[in-house]
Length: 519
Ligand SMILES: Cc1cc2nc3c(=O)[nH]c(=O)nc-3n(C[C@H](O)[C@H](O)[C@H](O)COP(=O)(O)OP(=O)(O)OC[C@H]3O[C@@H](n4cnc5c(N)ncnc54)[C@H](O)[C@@H]3O)c2cc1C
Ligand SMILES: NC(=O)c1ccc[n+]([C@@H]2O[C@H](COP(=O)([O-])OP(=O)(O)OC[C@H]3O[C@@H](n4cnc5c(N)ncnc54)[C@H](O)[C@@H]3O)[C@@H](O)[C@H]2O)c1
Image (tube, rainbow, N blue to C red; front, side, top):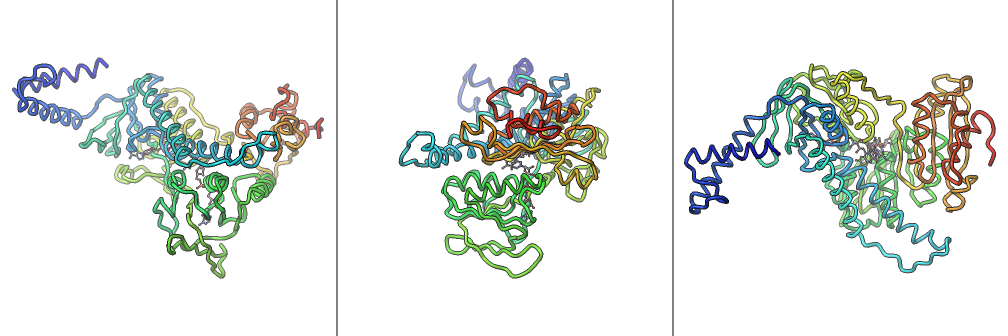
């Protein structure tokens, strides 16, 4: 605040001394003079902006979960920090067009579906359940704007300078920002952190218009419920958005190139998950690719063919969602000019201290290798600035959980059974179904299981996979177990509250090294 007031006084002083009149608000002496003063203020401000900020310790390019968390942590560690973001709001993909709006719509659509199909079994009768889509979207937008503004508040609280504009690295220690309000700003800093995230992977022959042929961004803002929706890609985005629109009444077909949905998931859990989604009326076309999407009247004609090649067929749809993965976003950053190396997938190459190939330039989050997840980006951000501060920052990518927020949710951490087998590690498996869990039965939401994989000789937990209600909340005791090198017996002998869904984790652990009680 003091710096701002000081610069305000400086601008007034320069304009008065240049005889452009007085500040119109304080000493009004004619419209002409006021306008001249205004022009002078703008000119001096533009000059000051172009002259730039010196003596910055850390400049973070990108204000997503990686970038904004890195900026806050850097400021907390005593670095003079600036964060450059070109979107016009903080929070990146996650808060604006990713995690948050998708979870808002998943929750709203789940409530609608529950009211229609599940309330009656609990003796709650509701008739004529309706969807007010604009209101549903309003609630989503409110959640997004509240959270993005909250980050601006955190920046103020932690004294992070927020520069709105597109940053380009012009050399080690130099970032030139094309300001959203016009003009440019030069920033000189000791350390530059690239946190520019990722963007939708486009597919040949398919042009996204964000109305009928949409990426996740368009799928989060449809103004009508499509009668038929084709989802290209049976991964995280595909299945979450398919759940949203399927629950609201769309007929869903998921076209997946691979021979299974969510390829990173444990095979047994994935099979069970697919069966559950099929019960929810989702249709799957595996080992299939979409080669073309054309407009046909008011709808779309979608050409599909076997992934391995073969005869093409067509499907009709009102909306096609392209959800075949995301790619790192480095457009306009000037990486090639400054010599920052990227790998063949376009990811910025970093060492285990987040250092790029150029001294003083670091990278974190979706733009570097590793799972493209918000919590991983945040951990990268914290570890990166801790290392800059001479501390021991580290992220263990083997214990980053993955959660698909469908219903039931699927959450996992560590190795799948396939991975353990392929690595030739001797192992035990323990499983426990939610059908045998008293809490799941009492709330009539018992689809799914907990599966634990532990080393056969040491009993050390290697992987935990949960499909069930609130799996995304339950997975964290497994993350802790993996972080601390716990055994399945450690989990089993830990007292769990009753009746809770988490007791299924305890029982699965009992089944891993011994026997469960309730199954
Ligand atoms: C629909 C959807 C749902 C998702 N749901 C989840 C979920 O539930 N859980 C989860 O963990 N992950 C989820 N993700 C993934 C998650 O959003 C990303 O992993 C996370 O946002 C990555 O954070 P980041 O900071 O690396 O990048 P981003 O969040 O992409 O942020 C990068 C920011 O940098 C800005 N930027 C880019 N270039 C420049 C430049 N030159 N100058 C200034 N600014 C620039 C961009 O505008 C952007 O705001 C989801 C993604 C999508 C698309
Ligand atoms: N809940 C969450 O944490 C969450 C939610 C959404 C997104 N995300 C993140 O965003 C990233 C992107 O999500 P996504 O679902 O787009 O990617 P994804 O990698 O999860 O899934 C993409 C799927 O598309 C398939 N595919 C690829 N090319 C294809 C083609 N031509 N035709 C048909 N199928 C094809 C792949 O085999 C894969 O199954 C994810 O990697 C994830 O990290 C996370």
